[in-house]
Every structure is written in structure tokens, then in C-alpha cells.
Image (cartoon, rainbow, N blue to C red):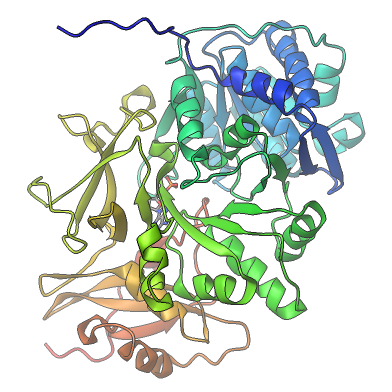
Length: 547
Ligand code: AMP
């Protein structure tokens, strides 16, 4: 029999992160570009804590929010959104972050599915609120996240955030409750079927923040100036709004302006050292730096994830701008972090080309995330750096079910979550994703990695974006079609892209055709919508098919 230890049973509470930041890093700043007018706003963690306590009083007394209620946000990254993260979860309610890029019908569906009691929204999203408010029967209060001077754009009866909290006391004792209580709700992008809700707990968010704080993961301390460009409506901005105050990092919130020029301005003025976001954001910034001849010398590291890091982007940032690009992998169901690419000391001694091969992997497993890769029959595959299979994960910040019972088929009987990604693992715990299960191109019984093919195509100077999709083929079942959005002003020369690929990928991977598209369809979380491409090219026939 084991011997029970005498350690305290202290529930992990999200509010404790802010209390700690206010006490130990009280003068550290949150700097926001305000979504309503683009001006810069500064407040310290101590001030944020005071305002969050005022918010807690307003939520419970004015809006009558009770434990377990869902309170939604449709908002950019800002100090007010930060306060809502802590205020809503702090009173025992659930922050339901809504992705404003979704179709309004889907937003109505989500708010109804979640039975949201109140919605906090930025002025830029007033048109969405004006369009959906009538249909959102559960919502009793709409709150515009600004002050009275910006109320003009909203047709719906509402309060403003500053009026809501302005007359409230900053005396509030954060309640302590079960650490397994729900604190956040985020719906997955759901390219097919209805979106599925992931319900985070106080415990899972605190543990995720602690794990990601480690030096070989996100590793931002009190000296760090971190800017989450990844939105707070996309998996808790990868946990940065929790990890930054936990460690006393300065936090930069870029608001609604995510273009290269605006990001560059904030990076320069606040001396940002660490930034996190999806590849499309870094492509936009790179474009700006190149055309304007600007630099980002304060930035030491970039955390890049959400989709694969293109080699051309890695080389451009590392070789020209001296920034370390760290690829991360995860998903909404994983809070999100599962792997981060930080080289091991023995790998730092390798030559540059060998290092690049490793850096293009999705990264090394973070402690706390259990992973196995299985074949179609469910048999676990070896960690040999080549045996690809279906990735399954488990751990304290990984969903054990979807909200209200959806998607039960994603969970195995023995307690693993099926990610839908296809990958292999190597002997150092580095994972390489080769595809989404539904995106692999199966040609003559062999798998072609659409991700590798796309990455290779992105190396061609005329390619802005590339997507490889499998198209029916009479002999090989499927062959790759490469859909390309050409760079502005570049010639649309399919043969030159194919010729380039012949030197980059195995011969049998070279696509059977290249089709140019004016604008690549991009989903709500910044990923290429392959479902849409399959729809566009559903009757496609390759020009030269030898039966
Ligand atoms: P989401 O839940 O919207 O964050 O999407 C999660 C999915 O994005 C994962 O299952 C992967 O398919 C994809 N993804 C995330 N990070 C990466 C990465 N670094 N490389 C390739 N795919 C990624």
C-alpha cells in the first residue's frame, strides 16, 4: 500500500495568477493597441488586477452572472479582453471566446449551443452584433468593450465596459472552488459538421501555463516582452495571457491591426523580444520588412504554429533577421501546446542544413503530453523517425470529451484523444507531421505528404501560397494537384514550378498539374481551407492522363 503524503491540497485557480502578478510584478505593463481607435493604452498588472476586481463585482451584481454561466467575448487582444479572461473565470463563470471570422450563422449557433448569458464585444465587431443580436435568445446583456464616446456604431441595447465597471468597488475576494470547474470554452474551427466545444478547467489552464513557461518551451520570464499575435479567440492565444503574468513578462496586445506595418511599429516601440502567431502573419510582416527595408532587432524568438512552418520563412527570418524560429504544434483540444521545436545541445553542434531539417519538424514533446502514433489497426508504431501513423494524445490539459457530448468518436476506449494528424516521432521525441488524416494523398498505395509538397512549392520565387490536394486518377487512385496563389506581379508559370519541384521532392511526388487561383480560401483560424478547394476542383480532370 502506498503511504499518503502530507502535502496541501490547494486547488489551482486562474485568479491566483493575476494576484501573483499584481503582488510580485505589480509595475510590469500590459500595452494594448485599442481596437476601437488604434491608440496605445498602458496599464500595469497591479492596475489590471484592481480593474478585474471591479469587473468581478459588475459581473455578479449588475449582470447577475453565476458560477457555471457562460459569458462570451467577440474581441481582439487587448487589456480589456485580458481582464475578462480573469474576471469571468475568477467569479466561477466560463469565458466563451468566439471567433469573429466565422459565419454569423455559426456564431448564432455557438452562442445558443453555449447558452451564453452575456456577450462582450469590440467596436470593430459591432456589425456582427447588430446582425445577430435578435437571434441570440439566451443573451441578456451586450457589452461594448470601450467607453461611452465610442458607442455610436451599435444599434443594439448595450452597456459599455468602462461604464459597467467604473462605479464598482475594487474590493473583491476571489472565491476558491474545485479546480476542475470550467473556466473557458472554445469551439474548434469545424471544417465539417457543427463546431465542437472544448471546455477548459482552472486546473488545465494553470498547468498548461506552468508547462509552457519552462525555458525549453515558451520560456518567457520577467525580462521578456511577449506579443501574442495569435488571437485570444483562438485557443486562449496559446496560453500567453496566463503564462506572461505568471512570469512577470511585459505583455503587448496588438488589437485589431495585424498588418506588417502596425506589428513592426509595436515591435520597435515596445522592444518586443518574443512573438507568437500563425505563418500567414509572419509572411505579412516579412513582406513589409523586405519592401520597406526595416528590421526587428529586438525580437529574439518567434513561436510559429497552427500550420506548418515553410522552409522559406524559416530561412528568411533566421538568416536575414537573426530571429530564432520555433515551430510549435497543438490544437484547440490540447489548450493548445503539445510540442515546441527547441534544439537539443547535441543538435546545436550540427551543421546548418542538418539543423534546418530538424527545425522543420513540429517540435519536441512537452512534458505533460503523452503521445502515441498508431497504424490503421491501432498498433503503436516505433519512434524511429519514419513510421508515420495516426497521432493520439493524453494529458492534464487535453480534452476528455467535447462540450455537451459531441464527437465521442474522437476519443478511444483506453483514454486517448485522436488528433486527426498523421506524423512520426524520432528517438529524441521530435514529432514530424506529414498530414491531416483526411488530407493525405494516397497514390498507388503510398502516401504523399501534402505538407512537405506545399513547403517545397513555397520555395519557388513566384509562389505566395500553395496547397496540394489529391485528385482522382484512373491508374494511381489519387495524384496530387498543386493549387497556387502566385506572388503579386509574378508570372503564372506552371512548368517552372514543376521543374523546381523536380529538384526538391521525390519524382513520384511531383504534382500532375498546377492550377492558379486568385485568392486561396482561408478559414477562420488562418488555415487554407482544403475542403473548399476540393469543392472548387470537384470535377477536375488532369490534362494528361494515361489510363
Ligand atoms: P486548431 O485546433 O484550429 O488549432 O487546429 C489544430 C490543427 O492545426 C492540428 O491538428 C494540426 O493539423 C494543425 N497544426 C497546428 N500546428 C501545426 C504545425 N506546426 N504544423 C502543421 N500543422 C499544424
